[in-house]
Length: 336
Image (cartoon, rainbow, N blue to C red; front, side, top):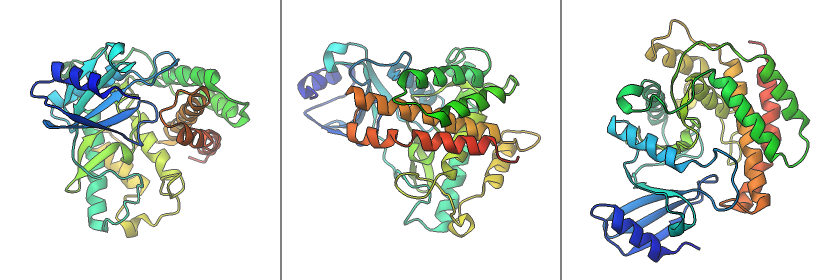
């Protein structure tokens, strides 16, 4: 149970102009890092904290979220303004940070129900522009040149997530073992292309206002790396079934809805990034499936260990790890 008195005192001491009293509402989002909306006399804020209990090494780095959000806000990107990072675990029981609440519409369903085709087209175009903006950040000007380690991004991510999957695995998963072997065998050589990467690029991590992106959220997995990982993550989501569980575009008549086809979206991204040709996204999409399978297995493990923000939802999400592994196998073995 959150000690609202302690939180209010901490925010009042560290945020200019803050004025209580406060009310706190835990959101349904934030499976990895518990997220709360704080309503105060001085306005609305969002608090993101590490979960309580034993955690995997390098996971739930809310201090990294705080750093990148602060840097990107200063560079004019559409992210919330950060207010306060608390490293004193005695206040809440874990490290947390506070940022401004940003108004906007959030869509869990990429078909964007109750939106007309013209608006959908504008929103997807804005999403593409936002991705290009993230990948075009001047790392030196933003003070993020050291935000990630050097070397092949995909090798680094592969080592991290295959290792965390082994630590988190609840039961044998032959599909994931096969996908790990395929990813390892088809690992591309390092081409030296390094940008800021969001790490979880999908439409439900965005807010929209007037059909344009008003905020990019959930930077927990951000680092320096290969930008096609973000594009692959978006294509991965589109391959999933439509509905509350898959939240994808499988089988959807995109032309009728005003949603771009993969080839057009990839070509538009390539043009805006100044690439000579549209990239082959087969490996990068399969890699996104692999990483999400590892993440979901970790979600399940936290639920079973009693560390999940929403245990019931976490268990349900965790059951889909094997589905992502299977889809990753199909993607990496598909004809190019």
